[in-house]
Image (cartoon, rainbow, N blue to C red; front, side, top):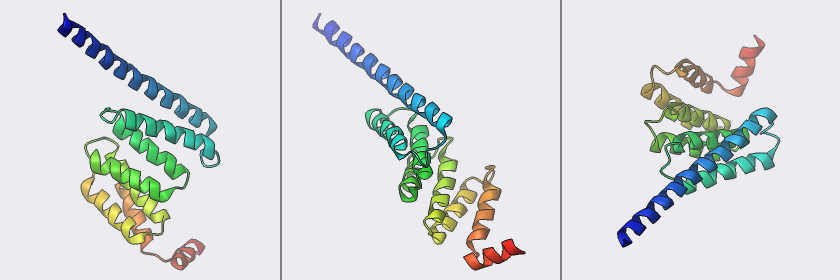
Length: 165
């Protein structure tokens, strides 16, 4: 009887964890849909922080969730939308490094390179774009990565001259 009670208690606890993960994910989806409607993340820092907090809660509460790579990637996108380039680069690195088999891993590496560009870290950006091209030679963004690498070779003055011509 004791074992039966223990098993029942364990199953109830397990079910509540699954329900909590589903609830937390639905909360994030609701916030994301509101974000899509507003499309002003760059200017609404309070709303962005609310969404980032929801991501942090989900990721810390459900570290083994299969949704983790996707939500980490979205977390990075929100940081990027807030122009928090270094934080975003760190998150994109975590996505690519710890979830390399995820469908979002290639884009995370590409976005990481873009964040390095915005931070004026041309060498890191170039190396990351090269890594992207080597690892994902058939990805649709390979041509864009090659173009971005070429632009990194130009100084600001060279770019201005190119646009004026």
